Length: 271
Image (cartoon, rainbow, N blue to C red; front, top):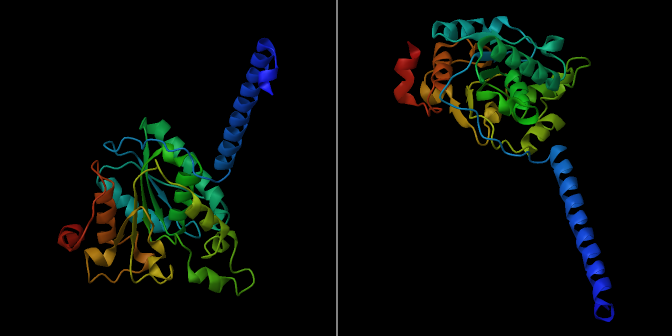
């Protein structure tokens, strides 16, 4: 017992015990920190300033076609936006993680060229998932002011499941868009605290993202085209070129906060 020890020896034993306890606490803290870095909640960081819109990155969908985003780019440039259509690797059929890295490269290039502190990102279809991966899993939360996704299968699509029934019809990006894919599960598990405001826009008549509300994202501002213009018949492939969708995107990329749009905005956005 400590009481049986000489005072000097007792002080030494207590000092050693205290040091051991401190080292144990430090070790546990280090382990927990590394566990968090391996896929747990990341440390929250303050969002980049919201009052200064940055250059816009447009991220193409499955297949990587840039032509389908030209009309959106034209509409944004007409409003004075600096726009880059991101070219993703492997014709948009490879790993969405690699596509996310391509978004990061484009963001750095746009910021360097313009001197802007941040970028605004619009991801169409699978491009929205890749952009979300960049924001949540890489360093996008430190560079993106705002993220808008258009018809993005955040929870997968039944079309990918159909693709797996035919040999060679469902490459890597397709398999990552299965409702049960590990990549989508990884995104759902990651804490997005401290990231940019996210707006998810989709059409209730989507014929590629099935069910269409797979585009609904917890924590985002969720808007359907039909919630703004009830008579809209736009489907998945028409989203980037649709005037109402373009108007919705322009509204959400303004200097103010994200906006809840509704039927009262239909006439204005249709012009």
